[in-house]
Length: 97
Image (tube, rainbow, N blue to C red):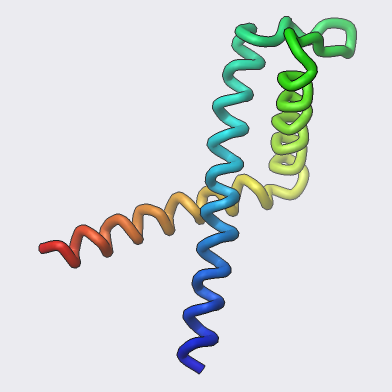
């Protein structure tokens, strides 16, 4: 039973840390895209970027924002991942004392 609890905790950690990384990536790429650095402004319903890779990344950011607004699942998982990261860092700092 103890092994099952630890494996479930590791699965939850992987999911939450993955969503945290995805959320940070969406924020960084979204800042580059909407800041006008790699893509031009959104005009006439279309987005034009300097390469197809940036256009795919812009689609990812749009999907992440849309899912966060409609279901709030990606954003809430990223926030829980941030709390878990702070808890793990404080636990590691307490061990070293």
